[in-house]
Amino acid sequence: MKSSEPVIAIRNVTKRFDAVVALDDVSIDVAPGEFHAIVGENGAGKSTLMKILAGVITDYDGRYMLRGKAVRFTGTRDAERDGVAIIHQELNLVEQLSAAANMYLGRELRTPWGLLDNRAMEASAAALLEQLECHVDPRAPASSLRVGDQQLVEIAKALSLDSNILIMDEPTSALTETEVARLFRVVERLRRQDVTILYISHKMDEVFQLADRITVLRDGRMVDSLVRADTTPREITHLMVGRDIEDARIGEGHSRKDVVLEVERLSLPWSGHARQWRLRDVSFKLHAGEIVGIAGLMGAGRTELLESLFGASAERPTGEVRLHGKPVAFRHPAEAMAAGIALVTEDRKRLGLFSHLNVRENITTCTLSRATSAKLIRRPRENDLAREIIDQLRVKASGPEAAITSLSGGNQQKTIIGRWLLTRPDVLLLDDPTRGVDVGAKAELYRLMDELCRAGLAILVTSSELPELLTVSDRILVLCEGRLTGEFTRAEATEQKIMEAATRRELVA
Ligand SMILES: Nc1ncnc2c1ncn2[C@@H]1O[C@H](COP(=O)(O)OP(=O)(O)OP(=O)(O)O)[C@@H](O)[C@H]1O
Ligand SMILES: [Mg+2]
Image 1 (spheres, protein in one colour):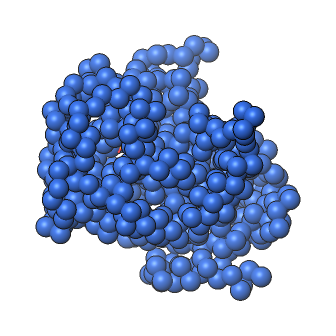
Image 2 (image 1 turned 30 degrees about the horizontal axis):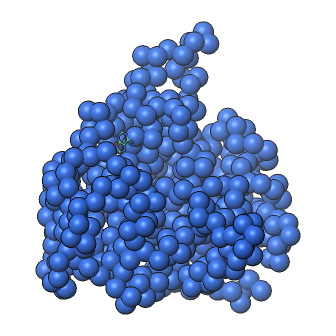
């Protein structure tokens, strides 16, 4: 441990959002060059604290000392000038702009004649993305990038600011194993350059692999700040939730029933791409009362598979899909919904949340018919439905009327899952449902999936975390470059076998 003056010292910081106390008298020291992990349940106040450090939130009580001097940022530009950059939990790219334009937004490079120097911006964006081993075209619009790539663009943007304090708010939540490994290589390089890193994660293995020090927040309070070498994941989890979490072991004794969904030689074209197919000849059956996991690396086609089953893919898939024995070809998600299929998407900001609506409206938006009589929305009924979900999933919100944007990231995710549960689907498609969800709530979601499955629902789930898939799935299908390259029962499946199937390129060629 380095024992010099703290580079960041927070003293008695309190932040209220109306009635909600997001941070309550928090004091923390961060040593120069250290990797400091911040952990805590959904809604504990982690992002709020980071936003104060990075000048996003400027209105708070308490003191913030940066390199020994009291600072009061008036915005992120201020913080960036002082070498503090943040990579936000919710991706913040401007969809219409290219990756390069996003990286230089507000500080565009110009030619000596004052014109936008796109060439220079693209070249330096390309070099930074190269460092991250990220192969997206810097000219591609952000909207064309998958979440994982968008996140890398955000990281590249922070790197381009030459910050010596880097705040990462759940940077790996949308990345697959290989990308996480790639990010960690970048992190190691930054550490050698004495960059101080503040890092939020719900993944305990990451925290223990990387951190010098771990600070735990609970309900807006600083519970403890521990040297990594002196603590254990168990102790940290306990500090986070105030109780022990049992290891989730579900699925023992699921009894699968009739086939609900049959997929035969499903293919999804990929216009203008060398690979031609996002999905190629994918065939499998899904039974009522079983949970089937879909494993695969980034780009393997997991999301595309779920989207094409939901009538939400950009191009029309070919092949045959039968629901309860009847051929179906959904042209629109509304048709899939009406037939009893629900999809919880991985990219909640773009596809899932209605940010102008409140929590109640976000939960009931797909189920209004159940709360409607004589074409009028019965507010009390809608409120009951929303409350049911808020209680069942333990959504931390000040109430059904709270703005959805006022919820912490993990709680927004629970809201969307709740919305789809209310539609009482036969087939539930979950695309990385626990992304950004804390340990306690994860266990809660696993339990819920288990319950739903026992009640006869068929669940198809993807995850960027293999251990999670192994925990929840009765069966695991493995995709590699759009093709099915493996299938394992719960008893057969191991991380090793799945990774082998997921990288089995020779079978694909
Ligand atoms: N803009 C806002 N308006 C009202 N309340 C807010 C706002 N931002 C955060 N909050 C509330 O402050 C509390 C802390 O939220 P914060 O986003 O800091 O949690 P977090 O620890 O980052 O959680 P997660 O792990 O889910 O991302 C939550 O109760 C949240 O609802
Ligand atoms: Mg957060």
